[in-house]
Image (cartoon, rainbow, N blue to C red; front, side):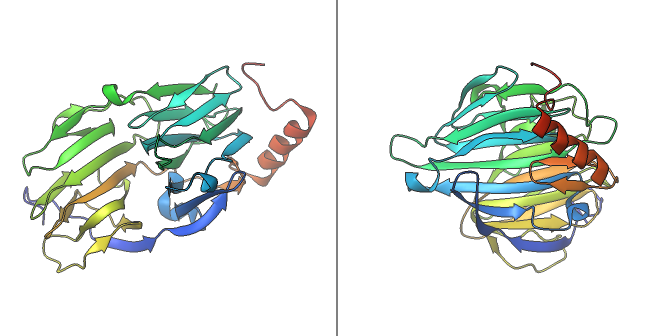
Length: 292
């Protein structure tokens, strides 16, 4: 049980992210996206792109389409230049978030550039849209690091609140249909951090530095370290306990959509016929409905 009497979520699966290559040759680690989209509903993909070798990321992700999803890019180190068919262009710098809703269709590119020492580290998360929203007008939200609140909770953990809320603070990304929570959490050594989560929501953490146990308070739990995703069962809270070192992880949750997923490449719809239509429109040049 959690300290407030609620039920702690227990670990459902621990998944090591796997090396893969995307775009024009970007080396990254994929934690979600190989199979079983229903397991992570409403989330479809989570990539961890980090490298100190520019040749492993500079070729980037040239122009490509999206429909039916949201892509969330969060940069820890370096810069990512971006441009899209809505006319948006700019740079996602360290600490910034780009929350892009593809909706009916968008074509964009993302080109990692690294920092002055050639280091690059960021994440891209894909969130599904329900059938009723898949063909909504695309929208783009760029959130600067300065606009993302960082708070300390009672345990001493520090939390950057991108979406959702923690320690009474609400993040800047709101009005998203799947009611997501996206937190960047750092827990110092010898601390037990507990965070309330909505019952019925999909909840996972992705460790990107250090080690900790992610078990319920009444479980022994093994230390889980860098590049591992922890998918939780249902409950009211998540508890993370550190030993002699700190841990930094993403804590992400969302309300499942519970609809069929028809997915091919960067387009995610509900049926194979909708996919066929989308790719036919790409060939005909009618894919973009807004911003032409």
